[in-house]
Every structure is written in structure tokens, then in C-alpha cells.
Amino acid sequence: MKRNNRDFIVRNAEEKDSEYLAVLCEQLGYSTNLKKLESRLKKILKDNDHIIYVAQLVNGEIVGWIHAYIYKLFYADLMVEIGGIVVDESKRKKGIGKELMKCVENWGVEKGCYAVSLRSNVLREKAHAFYQKIGYKNEK
Picture 1 (tube, rainbow, N blue to C red):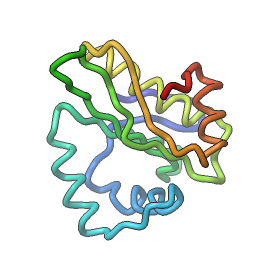
Picture 2 (picture 1 turned 180 degrees about the horizontal axis):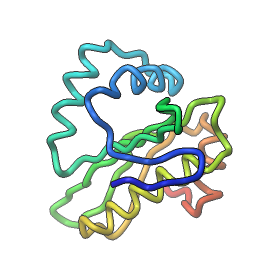
Picture 3 (picture 1 turned 45 degrees about the horizontal axis):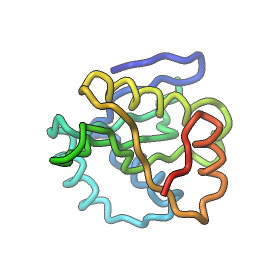
């Protein structure tokens, strides 16, 4: 998938993106070992039930990512679970997060999923405001 915006594109993540992804993980609050991240990324990129999109500026810099996967339960229809999303702190409020979410929503439709779900710590007030702004509801 590749979606264009005048300032950035959204595309599927690639193994070569690992260093950018690691930096953004730090901004999300998750320190990570680059070698472990690279190993996990390599496996996930081969799994058709997972997707990782990146937002890339025209200069090549990756400024956001979203990871989602198919959530399978024997008693419910398929749905997409967002494993994580982050946009570089200096690039927020420019439509990048919204575009990443749209890409995952479209991917979910293609996969036959009926809904998109995500979990977010109650302390992440700005994240909750973002999700509500783009139409998500808080459920427990």
C-alpha cells in the first residue's frame, strides 16, 4: 500500500526502516534493543495477519508508524487490533496519525474485519483526545 499526501507518504514498513522505528518506539516510551527489534520486525513483515505502515516525508525521514494485526477469537468475528501507533513529537497535528489509522482501517476491510480496536493507557490523555477526534469511542 502506498498513499500520498502532499507532505508525506504512507507505505508498508521494510526491514531497512528499523532504526527509525526504534527511535519512534523511544518516543512512545518503549526502549528497545535494535537487534531484537530487527528480528521481530523481520518475522512480523512475513506474517499476513500483521501490518506495519510508516509515514515517510519527501526527504526520506520516517516520522510515524502503526502496527496492527488480525484479532481472532472463536466466539466473535474478525477484527483489527492496533498494537501501537506513534508520530514524531515534532510532526504531530499534521494529519499523519489520521492517515495511518485510515490505512489500517482499509487494510481491515480488505481482510474481512468488522471493527478496529485499540488499547491505550488512561494516562495518555492526548492520545485519547486524538482517537475520539477521529471517531473512536472509549469502551471498557
